[in-house]
Length: 417
Image 1 (cartoon, rainbow, N blue to C red):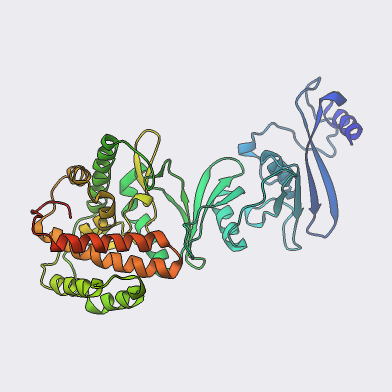
Image 2 (cartoon, rainbow, N blue to C red):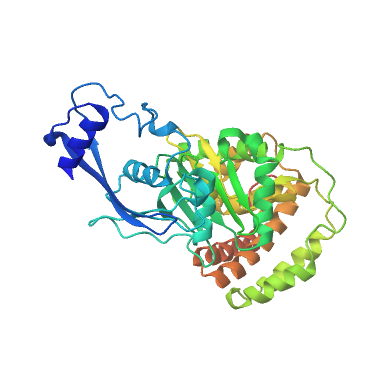
């Protein structure tokens, strides 16, 4: 094979290649649309003598240099497969075309499959084939998939690493409601936050899947910071919440949009095995109390605004991800799941409110108290049903804290409960 490379290169281009300068690159097992099979051996040569020229004009129309990022079209799919496999760092690949495929390369019928080498890590769990195809149609060939789903049943999230650079996240939603909320948010108010959010690349309503860009940073949940750093972070979180709530003009709350007894009873029934004595009565009393509260204006909300959905980059900048629970609602809705993080730390609450730019009104404080209790019950039943013990424990902590605060007569207005 090496002797053939040296001979044919000289005959077809007029350049001289030394055998010692030939390096094996990648081997591709190919099947053409007509059914014929071959094995192609691709080599890399970086040193030669002479200038390339067309020496066989009867079988060659042109010769040019091309960047890997700007390959010519049309190109024979088999040749493109070899170059793409080489760029991905593969040593072995399969390229079996279907009878209906064209000879020319087309992204929609890209048949390249890379074979892992001995010593490579075992392949990580991957999305379903149709999700992989949807992703590659959107951003190009994916060289590696990393399952980064949350640790509860039903979560399907992958980090996709492009064969030629780039990283994206692919999410398959549990249902059409979550998918619709995520897509609506990305196509409406999320872009107003700029670099503080990912960007939607594509959505497939049949697959309930989205592909979004990656934003730098790690979740704040579980991160360790000094008290001063924590205060600075909560100030940024408050500012981020303000940006979300001011992304569109507020609107009046629809009639009957407050907490309902029926919804509370459904959540209580599902959470009952995990509730403490007196929790149910406490929540029912809060729902009745909420019915007497004036309604709050509705704004865009994240819906799951908590530390695990807020990322901090190396330069300290924050970004927010995951908008499948986004919808119009009272602004305090986005402070509910943060309340567990500021529990016992009035300095963090003060920093957050300072970043938010205004204190909460007394009515907002009342709504926040009620919504936190209802969200705790909802989290308990959801966590129990989906194998998320952290969610169950957080809900139980919140109920305990709220009941303690409700029984206290020392809390003054504006003080975090």
